[in-house]
Image (cartoon, rainbow, N blue to C red):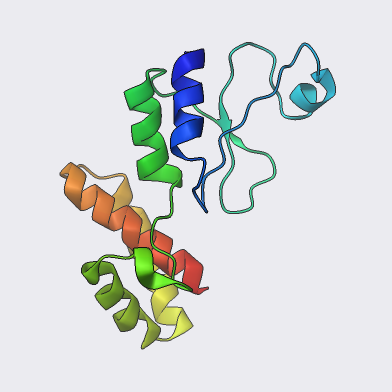
Length: 138
């Protein structure tokens, strides 16, 4: 798993939304204790300013880790700088900019409810992309 973790870190090295790091708990026991790490290896992820972090319980292969980061953590399209956005994302962004903050919040809630449902991977990806855009607008 160590090599897969290092490869993941290399892949996201230039990312503006994902940081892959590690802590040696035999050296930094205070940090690990503070974050509830007692078994090794433990993977935790932090998003949207969460200081506590969430425990990752998915697959430990390189492909599984990469899929989790891409689907859950990575923000590819930035509202402030849409050059990394697809045409579809820009169109959605423009549409949502014209709406009120209340309407955007309703859309976030609606999409959040849909996320747990069964859907094709490409539809789930589009759902996550829209959520990421909306979260940046608030």
